[in-house]
Length: 442
Image 1 (cartoon, rainbow, N blue to C red):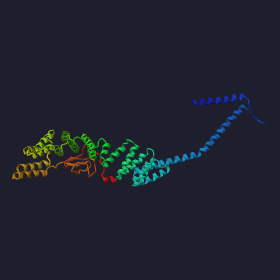
Image 2 (cartoon, rainbow, N blue to C red; image 1 turned 45 degrees about the vertical axis):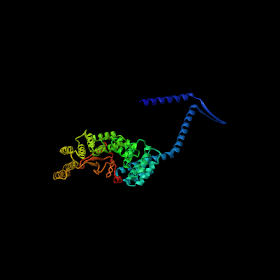
Image 3 (cartoon, rainbow, N blue to C red; image 1 turned 60 degrees about the vertical axis):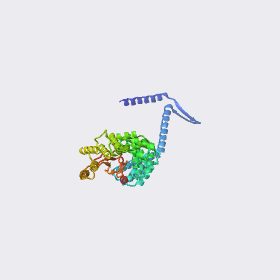
Image 4 (cartoon, one colour; image 1 turned 180 degrees about the vertical axis):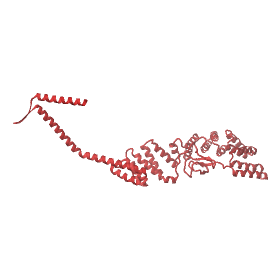
């Protein structure tokens, strides 16, 4: 309704203007020498308006004709873009379906239609990888990495994955540094650098880049073993003990360094704390080294085990020290208490009892009978604990940061054979690093 009223008012105004011009009268004359043209003023205005409209239409037509090639190019480019995006979509579907041959065909079509855009190059590289054409994929990744925009990161990421798959550690480290420079602080780059450090046994780098759940004590101790500077090595050993005071290898290494540096009291404190948390025979032997004679070592053993005297390792250490000092009665009482505790004694306790019988009775019929009895019990007893990998179950003569069988990091713990062990040292284990065969399969 409002639009109708507005149109009516506009028409009325136009009619009024026309009537006013008609009543206005007057002439418009144009003289060129002897030629004279004269028209009334309303007609002159009408001719002027018509001339303006004609000129405007002519100019618009010229502009339309002039823009015709550009419009044709734009329509052609839009059609190519639509077809190229359709080819990209079909390539994505082919990759998701696991048909690399079809994906490569669609990628080639997309490159013709869209050019070497980052998306097309990345799709092409992934299609080549899926088809097993690693060199062709590397060429596309290098094309991406040569770009000056943020898409360079995609190329570096692909090249880094390929370098790690073929175990080219030098190239992998270089590519990781370049990717870090392109995307500083990127979580994926940090994770890959940490994984690379584990694979190459660069323990200090792994410690610096590791997530909170990695075995920091194991990594710090391994980094200390690689550190040529004694002061830096001592600091790394201190970090290992601080991360896990009950981690036996770290406590032993740090105590030895403290003792060599003239701090025997601090060394004893480290060993005592570790023994309280994780009694271990190597801790006991290291603690008793300060004893000048057998009786002094008995005193040291009493000092060490006073916080957990009923632990099987405490009783074994006390019995060993007493037996070496000739205190056979003391040794017997401790060992008999150990074997009387259900499930506490292992093979070592019965072997110590057999040695005790030989010490007390010598080569007598009574001694041989007692020895034979304890040796039979030792043969049927639970084996003593050993260093074992919780990932593959392999046994090791000493602790190592990485299992030589399955190549996992931080999974070697002190445990009895046949027992289920699911936790690694230092409050967790590093993510498993695949062995050479598994890495080659990737």
